[in-house]
Amino acid sequence: MESATNHDRIWTAALVVIGDEILSGRTQDRNIAQLATWLNVQGIRLVEVHVVPDRTEAIGEAVNRLRARNDYLFTTGGIGPTHDDITVDAIAAALNVAVVEHPDAIAVLERHYATRGGLTDARRRMARVPAGASLIENRVSGAPGIRVGNVFIMAGVPHITAGMLDSLTGTLEGGRPVVSATIGCWVAESEIADLLRATEKAHEGVAIGSYPFFREGRTGANFVVRSPDQALVDRCVAELTKGLEAAGHAVTAGGI
Amino acid sequence: MESATNHDRIWTAALVVIGDEILSGRTQDRNIAQLATWLNVQGIRLVEVHVVPDRTEAIGEAVNRLRARNDYLFTTGGIGPTHDDITVDAIAAALNVAVVEHPDAIAVLERHYATRGGLTDARRRMARVPAGASLIENRVSGAPGIRVGNVFIMAGVPHITAGMLDSLTGTLEGGRPVVSATIGCWVAESEIADLLRATEKAHEGVAIGSYPFFREGRTGANFVVRSPDQALVDRCVAELTKGLEAAGHAVTAGGI
Image 1: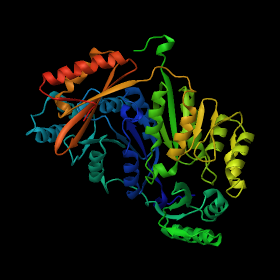
Image 2: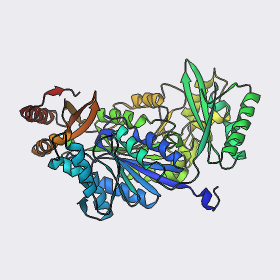
Image 3: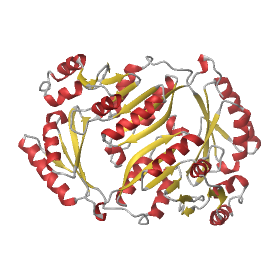
């Protein structure tokens, strides 16, 4: 239960992952985990993700739905120079604005391609943005990311997106970051389910996640305690540890 | 453009990935790529994915939205014995049916836990299903997956989901699988964007994806040609290869 004070306001973000290559199984997405981790440090919570194909209507539907109900909306994928890169056009259509060339993007691309064969028509496509947009610096390759309203348009290639996130670090308003602590036990989670439930209930404002695994022929589980309140996390972890030890289970701080 | 014959009907699936651990960045999802690959072999196309937190309303909204507009809807995550496993209750609520114990699931769990401390209350939770459901065999651990209508409820742990998919293989109606072929070139995709666009346009029914990479200080790209029609894919790859070679680029079959 969050109070109404501004300090405790929860800032939310959503992500639209754009790309046939994710939905075909060809490419393992890495941007969900990367963005989630980065957002958490900014005090912003990733609360939903949609993965959509390279189709204008699918992109537009997801973007409009998710930007309306979150503080921030990120997209990854589809901003390159080829025919299957339709993200900018799809988002401009969804926002009902024109697509324009951004003069700073032209300048960036001209510099980048000066020694690489020059700014061809195909490359010039990467300077196209929804009207009203500003640029997000791309420290890795040529084409910049794009910000329009609360929509942040990023690359599909994870290390390029990483560079764009790096240049956004500290620029987005957020709340308190969620902190988490993990402990692990060689126990079947089903044996201590009641303890987990009771411990979570006794610490309002924390969430305890239980993540079972099977290794070396044995059953174990890690328990992740999350809250924006570090002291609360610490108290909850201490109590859970005590409970697990009282039930005869050795506890590994930091998880197994 | 697909014709109206039944042979060419496109069967679609969606996936709802359920779990705070994905949205916090703690866990790298592997089920999207795994399910996509498996579905393709069944002749079913994964067309959208939503990732949602462990919250009843978020799960229900995604499930109802996606099951209505796809032939099949899969979920992963949240079917274990602990307090954060709310998938069955959330889906039953979304379908407006009761949650009941499935007698076969009780029998499966009793057998599984006979030598592991017996069927406790927490473990018995894993026999709860939406009314009207049938079970999906779990060849890896105890708790079965669940089918109710066109909704398939699977585990979050990827190798358990793999076992459930294995037991579903060949049981779902699908169409022709999409086949794909990949070729690679040490070229900046922006240099051959026009060729890609023209080649795709000249082969109605194929999609060409362009996936750039940077390796060993050089720029390259792989081009993936996809269609349910193998002959069409072959013709398109041959033509694209010819065009790339004519432009002075060596082509690597199978991709780089």
